[in-house]
Image (cartoon, rainbow, N blue to C red; front, side, top):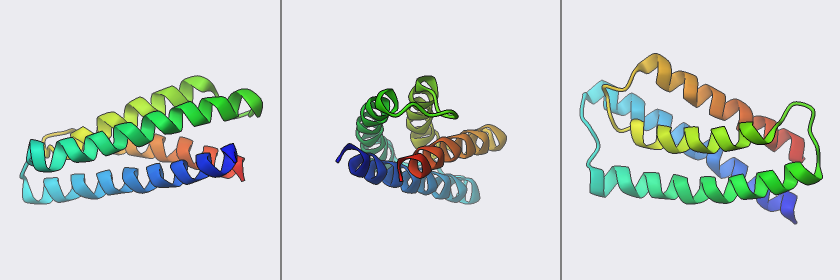
Length: 118
């Protein structure tokens, strides 16, 4: 049960991370910031609620199923990073290198969790 919910949440966060990357690419191409109340806040709120739920579930799972390559700090940092990325995606002046680095590290940890839960 816990594993099923964690896998579902992890998959949703992988998709939201990809969506944030697509939003950022669009913002850079058009050089336009997203509107705070109609775009940024709703997306960031969605990511925060999913991320917080995922972090809680992942930490519970990790305490029961010790993993060689996953640690609690990685779970916490991934949640913080995806929340940060969900906001920065709407601003074209965000550093491309830094943004891509965060997106890739988020994706790596999420895929590690997803594959370990199976």
